[in-house]
Image (cartoon, rainbow, N blue to C red; front, side, top):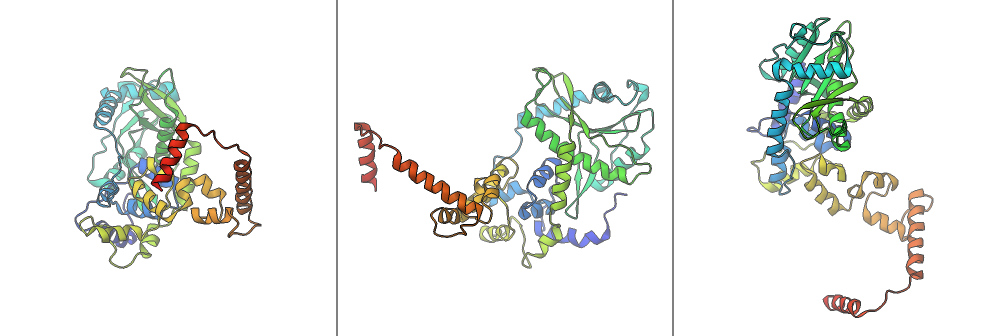
Length: 390
């Protein structure tokens, strides 16, 4: 069930060559996968993530390090809270699952199973997880602690590790996401909850692929259990988050991703992202893969600073935001936008060009009608100083 088809072996060897002979692949986690799905047009990220390239180290080598990552304090606090939630065989976690989602009688020590998911390598762990899900008994609560699930991403398998998956006595599967940010008076920070929902949607998609191979196919819940500290304590509380919208968006965006082998086929022979090569060659290799930068990348990709600098050098409109890029149609650079606004280029019948020229005319009218600012001693000093600098 977990074996990777032999037809993918040449691709895996090619991706290993792209990483470099001494580089170990960096696993693609659900957070990175959700960010990749949010920007499916970025071939650079698709290829680097598919090849398992360490983008943090790559950004350092390119001279554009990112401040990406979790603080050590937050990491330790998160691990301590997760351990508390899962203590005593996950009794508190299952109590919260029963309280919020139901699905059977109240869990007890006699009606709870925590299968051993240990195995060699991600493929082995994914196979063990699939067997545990298949063998989950009706009428019993089954808690899978850090299972491993596989999801096909642009023709390459990505192995993902949810915090937990609960199989209810009625056979339903529920993803559990444990976060260390607080839930105050029953609600948490909307941005953080949204990020957790997008991450959980990836796990739901992976579980659906497993469920589709079973007969009968069990129900994969689209309501995930978000467990957080209650108020300002370390006591766990939970909320149910509906991820149907995030699941649909993620599935659609992943389907749009160009297959990794197609991107690799466009590269020149011998292209590699080996960090040991000279900086100029490494930069050339990275730039040979097209990127689609947007300001949202700053919160989701380690290479965002490098791609932003390149986008600004080219005057790309995407550096100003995706919505603006969509409004401007075929005008993809700042120079082209300004030229169209001045009437120097562009088709007057193009709605974007017409809107730009109208905006430019209104700006000129506003500037002409505005009275000049009062000439005080302070403004005179500033103007004279600026003139002297010029």
